[in-house]
Image (cartoon, rainbow, N blue to C red; front, top):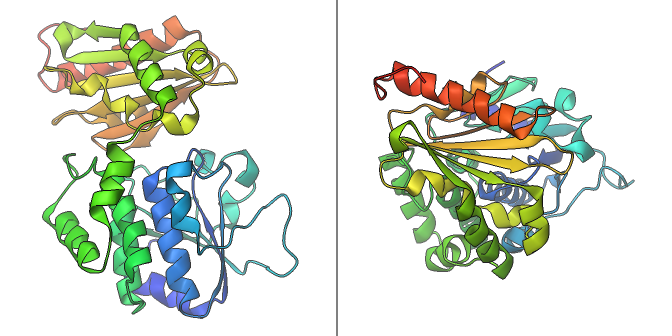
Length: 332
């Protein structure tokens, strides 16, 4: 059942033991939302815990300095979750292995993905929001939680990372007004921007250098693909957190309307990340393979096919999409 922010706030007021869940391979939006909501609810004298299948990347660790973490493998006898909230999770398969049993237990899903599959009992969804951080901001306002500097840092991180530091087409005037309010509330925008967008590890830099050698151009340069074999990750020592932003590289090339990054997973399957320029709809392409996301950014997975077949299928779908939009003159 879809509910409003006012109704979501009423639900949160009614419960005192709340567990907040983020998606696997966590990014700035899911983590910033979780930390901000956890601190906001704690200020209302709620018992709150946070859980994620994967480790919080180092650059986001400071967001959780005042947040208690829940380990599903070692439940704490002092905490029994009475209400489960997921933030920025669009589908069951995004909970990850450690939280694989949780999707059907979620009481409230707060999200901004148009492809959200409705796994939760109640869903507070705004597909017009540039980031789930915008929804959490409105929710905390509805709860009359003071937005102090720590919460402001978390929400600014959530919104800035999902908008590419306000460069992506999903950025709206509402996005910028909220960001301005967060800066007024004490968000250290300059420091956050530096850590999120202007600082990379040596391993990430090495990975990016090698990844550029795997670029391929398709459909007259309108589509650019990039492979990331496991061998590159192993050679450079890069971790999953080092991949932030690397999926945008193919789209940055002049003339490219659609960028496709194909990353080999540990289990041998492939994770695909699509990034597009208007009028391309990345979600429409990914939905053909059981994935989803947003118009400008979406993803899907292939579990068993060899790389060449994965590329053939995704490029066929991409070409057909570009043709439908009138961006190609001949069938792919």
